[in-house]
Image 1: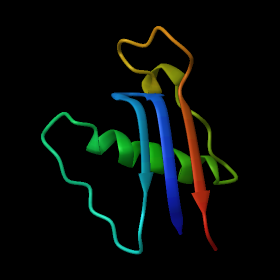
Image 2: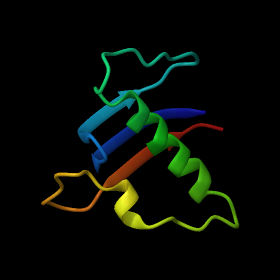
Image 3: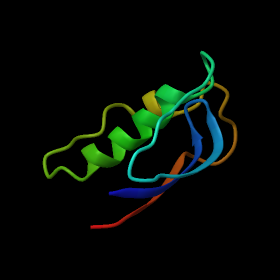
Image 4: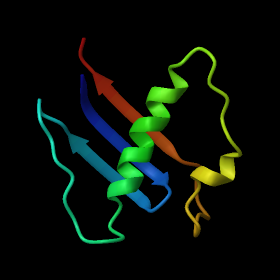
Length: 78
């Protein structure tokens, strides 16, 4: 189970830390980054697959990115 997620410089997320419980809900206004959180989680899931190939990396960058590349950190429990 995904317990913690930290995302930096990924799509619209500059620096986000989230702790998940057994049941978590993403709620927010349009354009606040809900879909970006889900895409970061799906990227982690897909990279864990043995046959995954990354699409062009530009897909994952923020449109205004000028600093370090994207970073995604996570903590899971089994």
